[in-house]
Length: 124
Image 1 (tube, rainbow, N blue to C red):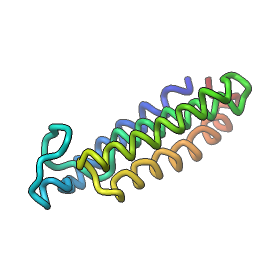
Image 2: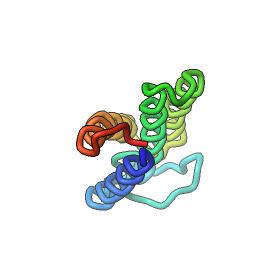
Image 3: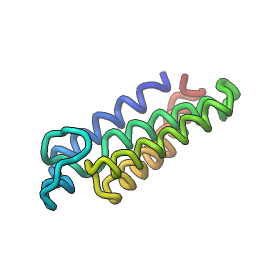
Image 4: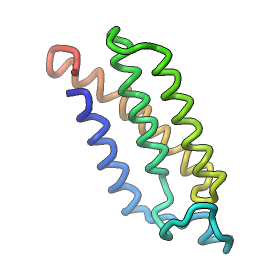
């Protein structure tokens, strides 16, 4: 059941991006990004948000002794690298990446404990 929280986070971040529809760095500064991408919907970074949603899910199941810490650390490093790569590729501003990560961490920190309390058991 723990996978529902990242899925809901993905949907929410996607809706938020469409609503805000912020320009990407290459839209404003007229350069070709390292990775081809469509214009707009830059804020917040969905790739970064998803990477941090996955990291948060793995951290949650680690905290319940169901997942090894080395893989949680690896997922955290990969989430950070995902964010950095989005900036370096010219697809996002740093604020896009920071807010994508922040959204995921706060959303997970609220939803996992809340669902556990509401459902009366560890969210699996």
